[in-house]
Length: 247
Image (cartoon, rainbow, N blue to C red; front, top):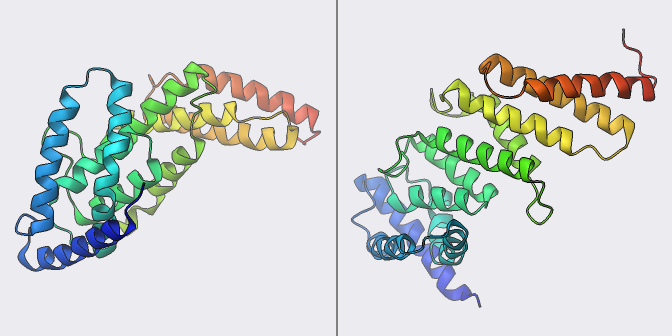
């Protein structure tokens, strides 16, 4: 059961802490941060004792509630100072599939030029794009109806690549292979989203073809060539079905 009064108070504390941190250049001197940071260390120790990945994910989902109000306060205030709670919550929300929240944290961290937690060697964008793409590719291969793939998050991440002017230089700098995996996942997801309605399927097929071509240009070994060949044939068949001129 939610304790709305506590959540409101914690969010208010976080915003006040953010104002202080922006003045002094760090979060560590604020009591709300220190208290939650100690809680984070306890929770990380607890998570290390859990062996099963699925159980860890469920535990992170449950534990995240106690950090959410703090994160909300920081994202609203944007103190732009290093914050281990924020960086770890980026990891948690990606791990648990809370992608809309993860993208909001990522955008804040990119604009503030913050780093992923110390144990990660990847940059913020590289971490998010790689983890999301790999997870979605696994789901696309598994065909598990209980855990469907998420086309929307792939679209959002791809769209963000075209808004780089809103972020510091090199914010979205990442290995070509990582971007290629995103485009392969996009292409596969669009192919899987076809619902047997020729006009809509043709539009999806053309998007998939374009995304797979981008993937292949970025990384010739991206494993998108077979899908590209398949979707090109689909387009030819669908154009005949829908009587779309090919000139």
